[in-house]
Length: 345
Image (cartoon, rainbow, N blue to C red; front, side, top):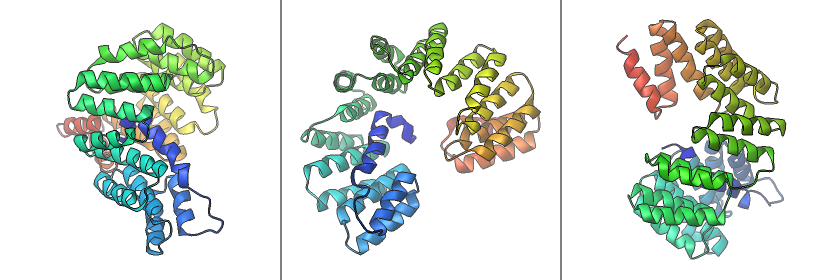
């Protein structure tokens, strides 16, 4: 399970990093570690936090920081141990609730569902927020406790009646092949009154997941007019699914004009090329995209690169590209299946 599965809880964690990030006047290992954590330089953060522990500076906060970095790197068991140490060293209510929220996520990710449930119950003692109820709902689904899951999702939605929360709940149900239950929350989301470009973007996504492409396009075009650049990317996806590569290409080209959007735009253009059977053009756009890719943007480009070579019937290169891809992204089930298929060619 990748980090994104946590949905709202992941957003809460990202925001919480700033809770104890800075505040010391002089530059030291602790402050450097906090800054590395915020930049996503997790190994460097762990190194500096550990140095700060050795110097006995803000030890519980360092253990918390080490745990957050380990959690982001998928080192769930190590993260649980770090959070446990942090909890033993600092008993402030705000700190305890914060660390327990991380610990519950790490336990969930590692498959320790009962322990995650217990951590969430402890959080309730300090006052549970929407992300806590949402995580309990996800745990309950894993344990086939469907009534309890719905009760907790309802409490999460009551505390946070946002498009993002309703989408997270829908996706949680979708992960368990319970789309009908999830779509009930999408319908509730559409009862909200949109205002910002982000609101219209979320509504467009909701209509898309409900299978209403016309409604999705209407909302997404509104979002784009209000300055929500991600709307163009999603419109490109919808146009491609409708086999309208020309309209999709126009959306991706517009998206490319936005600052910092080049890599994802090139990936979209490569998809348009492949839809039109122009695999050399796709590889050219993928190459350009990889040159522009920031952290987290290369994965889809690299996968599509292997697929493009497969369509060119250059199976030797496709196999090599997919093998390299799986070294970097070993948990991608689609890539695993694609690699197995390529072995037969």
